[in-house]
Length: 203
Ligand code: SF4
Image 1: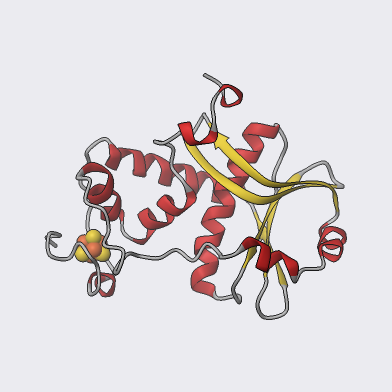
Image 2: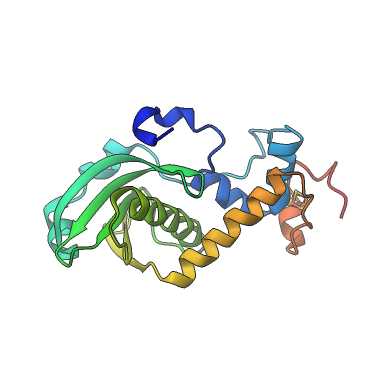
């Protein structure tokens, strides 16, 4: 079955960027959620700040400025993405097709730039890049984030082959867990202190 024959919501087992970010926070989250079916308590759930009201975020942006700054010649907005090859999915705010013949995902974040959240956003943007290359048969060398708080800062991310290879390795590791492998606990014990699984998680 091809993606054109299916609706986006049909791909329920495909990995989303937020699931991958949870996996990277602690591999065991995925085991408890996906293998044992124990969902995270909403109160204590590890929250991924993926952004809020899209309309509110975008209103404050001078999009023409962004378009010129990144060299965009055409863009698609709010694009559902799928990789049938790697079984991942997501939805990107924009795909920009650039003057040099490459494409670049762009997401608006209702946030200020912070290193800790930047890592999670970067994971998300690598996922989008993999899917854009597969769906549009175009090279992706960079991705962009617009931080709507703190002066609409535009941040460029180089999408290197190393980053893509690392992301594909993480997808393999994620799939091992789905297949039943119980992964080691996180090395960062501070993460366990307020984890909703701490009463069942032996370490
Ligand atoms: S208690 Fe620690 S090792 Fe276990 S799932 Fe939570 S964060 Fe991971």
